Length: 415
Image 1 (tube, rainbow, N blue to C red):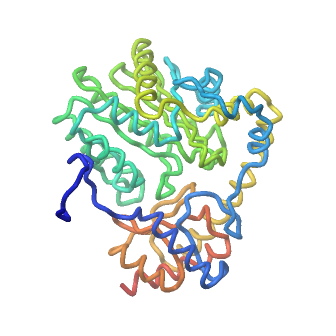
Image 2 (tube, one colour):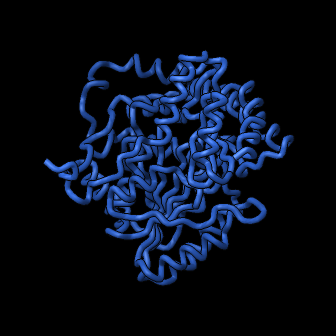
Image 3 (cartoon, rainbow, N blue to C red):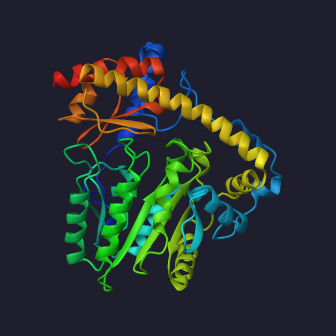
């Protein structure tokens, strides 16, 4: 039989490459076993770890899970999600910044499920999906899995602010060749840079969308990825931009992606939601209907216990207060690590993407694969990106965050 013989359908033939993040993480674990944890900097893990590399969880969230009756753990959830979860998730996502309009929610397995449904249901086969030139790699994977392509605008201008000009120009180009455009906008605490749009920048984005929406033949879908929002500062201040999603023209649909992975430390339970905001009631109903259909057609239903946890926490003010207090401890730790890295980078002249909050800091560089390989020789493990390297401050101690910038600078200089 020929080596080239394949049983896979042509559309599913993919390059056989190990995922970069998981490959780097595997190599870091091997180095830790060989040289000891204290002698390795493993910045590949996109989850909050303590100073000894152990996963951090919110104790109250785990306690609520353990106290659930067996039937709430083992039973199926409704296809769209538990009704009480679908109401609760709106409060959890928006807090005191609920936009005006018709709002519906559909349960998804984390934010990834929301991305999948949005791309599949609101773009056409072969369409370009618009995002920034620094973006979370699985955006591309999900788009290509469903017959779409990613195209980008330049994220930062010369002053390291949001490049509103590039955003406008790229959206204009796409609307000339497509009748609909899905925009993936990850803010606040952007993955991988840690950048957040200011409220004034959000206002400019919305004004641009409204201007393009004057052409009623065009449809604009703004996907707001807020995966890291609970680590992006004070809960309501970080959500002020969401009020801008209200009262928009009916040919602008906003979809907010909610995830329980980071804010509730339930990474592996795969629970999230997609939430639509629209000025048209029928569009909200349509969103709910197509979301339920897609749920049934792809994964059937989500994790009931995770949905129940969120509902239980938000119906009990004492539980909610405990969760927020525990999360604030983790936020403080994360902020201290990040600021240590940022201050040291500034001190020694290491160029980084503008960081405001979140799990990651990104260092632009040429030949990121070569830089990554050189760092491995010094037992430092990072994730190589297309235009730089990602350093996960969420999983590295403050002490190691202080040491890392000089080592990164030297590696970049020596390539």
